[in-house]
Image (tube, rainbow, N blue to C red; front, side, top):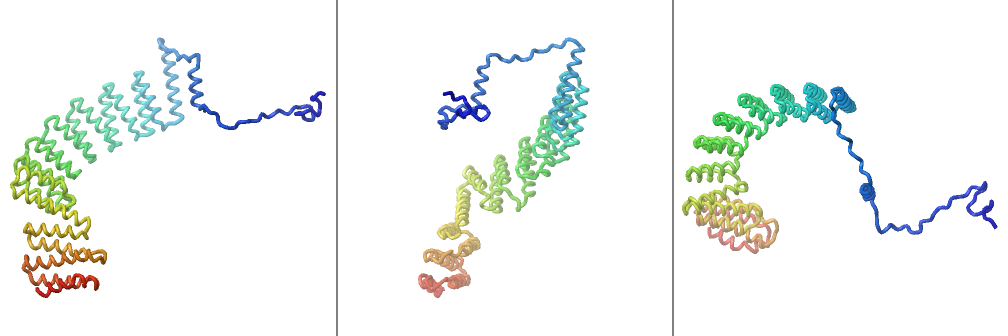
Length: 431
């Protein structure tokens, strides 16, 4: 029996067959995955024929050359017309005109580009470099003058302008450009470039005058040290010392930096002025905070080991230990063992009474943060040592009584009184 009739499988009324949909039995991913990148690479590798590059055209007829130039210019103008603000199109257009030796047209393109965006640094640089490359010096000078007037904060313009004038041997013109630049008070490198230019032509006095203005515009320690090193390098020892002294006076006590005094001391050390070196180090150590004077201590110690006597070396070691104890008690004011060591050092070295008393006052100002018996014992022993120092070393009975009285008033609670009150009271009565 035939199945092609109207009641056959897969047939619709009207005689049209319904297409069968294939079922996917296995929906798991294949073991080997093929990426689109791999397909493209294989298709490229299996190409049997390579597309040949277009042949090189050789233009031998003036009319053909004119036609070629017309087509290229039309293409460039179309690109510019689409987006006038894309400066790369203007630069490519001008460079193509330059390659055709059409300098007037290239200048016209650059001028049109600068009318669109006069702040485009690239356009100015390409324009000036084109004139310099073809030895159009007056044109180049005119462009540099315009760009440094319009964009005086672009250092690259000034560097290239001064370099061009110096290469031409126009030193006076180069100096004039530098002076115009310095009126804008540029960064440090610009001033140093000006100084180096003067030194290349042995103009030491001019370089000194520039340094004088430089340290006023950029008043930093490293620049004063540069100035002093310049004087020393050229043999002006007195002038170099004067610069260091002016720098110390300029910064004063409020803005002292150890780098300045280290440099000053090393200068004097090179001049064999060891007493001056010691005076500089001591002056700086008395005024600069201890946490900012690590290099000072280090260099001072090195100097005394090389040139000092025994007393000087011991003095440096004492200062270094004082610095270490200061750092220790500053990091942990409740470290009473550190205070004991510090005070023992000060008393053993025979320091004056006011200095030792100041450290005692600083130590007893740090009351224990808890009511722990052990900490309060160490703290009370600080008071006892303070009182004994006033009695036995300072011979000040009134101050001793005040110390004992303040100590007794400070007892925090009954338990501490029970633990430490009896010996204190006994000592107080004996005074």
